[in-house]
Structures are given as C-alpha cells and as structure tokens.
Image 1 (cartoon, rainbow, N blue to C red):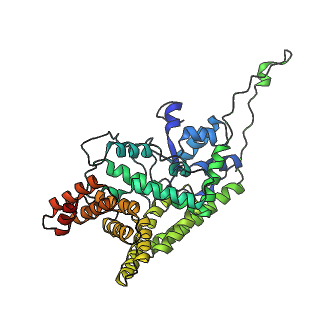
Image 2 (image 1 turned 30 degrees about the vertical axis):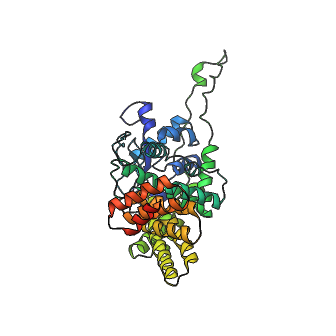
Image 3 (image 1 turned 90 degrees about the vertical axis):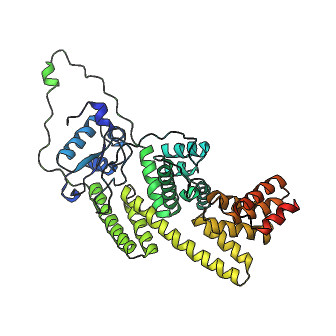
Length: 417
C-alpha cells in the first residue's frame, strides 16, 4: 500500500483516471474491468470497496497497482472536482480544496431562510438527480419541468442581482448549476436512461463479503499441507469485452464532446448542446462534460430568451397583447428574474388577463430584483389597489413617490386611497 495513513485514510481518497491513461493497452479480468468502470473521480475508495464487485482488499490492491502505473491519480478528499475525467483537454483544475464553511449572516441582503435553504441544497448536491429536483425516480417530463421551474425561481442567481450576499453568491451559483444539470439530463430520454442505469447498478451492487470461517484441519494431515499458497497466474490477462466496450464508449464520448466544444467556440449553441448531450449519453459519469453542458445550455437559454422577448415586443407593437403576454411568460422560463420582462408581464396580466394574483407575482419579482425602481413600485401599488389591499398599495405608492417625487400618476393613485 502507498504511504499516507491506514485503511481510513486510504478509503477517504477518491481515484480518477489520469489524463494520459491508455485503456486500450490494459489486460484486465472481467471483474477488474467492472471496477475500473466505476472509477469516475467522484466515488471515494471507501465506496468503491463496497460496489466494485471485488473483495475490499482486492479493490485496494487494484487501485494501488493502477496508481503506481500512472493509470489513476487521486483527487482531494473534499468535494469532487469538476474535472473528474480530465482527458479531454477542456478540464478545469484536477482537484479542489475543501470548501470553507458558510455561516448564517443576518447582515447580508439575503434572508436567513434563503441562506438556510441554499446551504441545505448545497449539502445534498451529490444526491441522485431526482432527489435534487424533489421528484420520484419515474416522474414524467412535465413533472420534472415543473419541479425545475419551481427551484429555478428560488435559486436562480439573478434573484440576487446587485445584492450583497457574500459567500452565498458561490453557493447559489453552485446549487443552480446542479439543478440545471439535473433537469437537462433527466429531461432527455437517452441521458436519463444512462443516469437510471448507473443508479440501478449502485443499488444492486453486491454487499461487502463477510470473512469465511476457517477450514477445519483433519487430524491425520499437517496444517502446512492445507495452507499451501495458491499458484499465481502468470502471463498477460485477456482484455475483457467489458473493458473494450468501456474504452470505445469513452472514445465516442470524447469525440462528441470535442465537436461540441468546437461548435461552442463558433457560437453554434444548439449544435454544441446536442453534441455534448451525446457525449454525456456515452460517458454519463464524466464531470467535465456535465459542467460544460450546463454552460452550453445557459447560452441556449440566453438566445431563446432574446428571441422570445423580440417576438413579444413585436406583438406589443401590433397591439396583440394576449400573445405578447404568453411570449413574455415563456421567456421568463429561461430568465425568471429579468426585472423588465417581469414588470411588463405584470402589467399585461393585470390589464389584459385580469389576473391580479399572477400580476402581483411578476410585479413582486421585479421589485425584488430592482427595489429602487420607482416604476416597478408604482405598478405593484396599483395592482394591490385593484385587489383591494389598501395598506399594501399605500406602502408601495409611497415608496414610488419617495423614489420619484415628480410622478403625478403615483400621487393621484395614492390620493384616491
């Protein structure tokens, strides 16, 4: 065993494939090929000893042998690095330091409840995707989409635009990226099938074998004859079909990923998203692919948001306000905290759809993002007034006048109360 501590220290390590490893040159038994397929840069050695399909001591010996040969390296014992695979040339740092603990800080511009919710989500980011989204493993796409939009409203970084939220900026960003990753991979049938296959394999992994009782030694034979060591097999081990298939899938995944990154560099976002999605389908444990996929999907979301808002603006020009409202609401699926679009949707929901409850939701969100914008405050006050909530209406209209004392419309609305 390598130096560096006992079984506890060894079990706490997390192995991953080295960036320059050559799987084609390996001679592995089927059991060793299965163990190698479980090494993903996320699963610590302690867990590999349970799910690797070999006795724990044999798992340790394989990992040590592969590490000495340069096939494996170890990431830090803290949270898994995003670049768990690192063989694509597009990875980030190969290891990440343990995150510093984040405490509840009432001085920040984020409520204590929101801080607690963000920390709770952050602590569970290694859970299965369906648990992150809060849905059943067999949930349909509509349920997954609804869960995603609910979490997006709560954890989207834009919610805290221009606010001092200290270390929670990193927490919220990390949580939201994982939510996007979960949604995208569970929404696509191909990647979802791979995710569920891995989940089922982990659930069905054989339990850690128990030591067998010692054999009884017949009285007429000496113990040395019974405990004679077995002869070790010599010569090359056969390259198993499992290992060969594993290497081929990784090679295909890398090819798709590199094509996706080339498209990404040229601004072909949809093509890039499709290629990286295929890469994940062939190699669903690769952390680099998943991280880059989130980046690509966010670019796609930006493009789609711009297209929808332009169509909505055009509908407004032709006074087709009903269609404009639908388009603005669809745009908010991609950027739920855009203040201007929320404000416009609020006014349309109030004046066109006659839906004060929906109008209030959009207006409140616009004020959350830009609380010093007098027009947003005035709209919210007028919506409260229409709903008969006079105290709330007075508060918002007074705020609007404080921010813009020359607003005669806000003054007239306040006087009418």
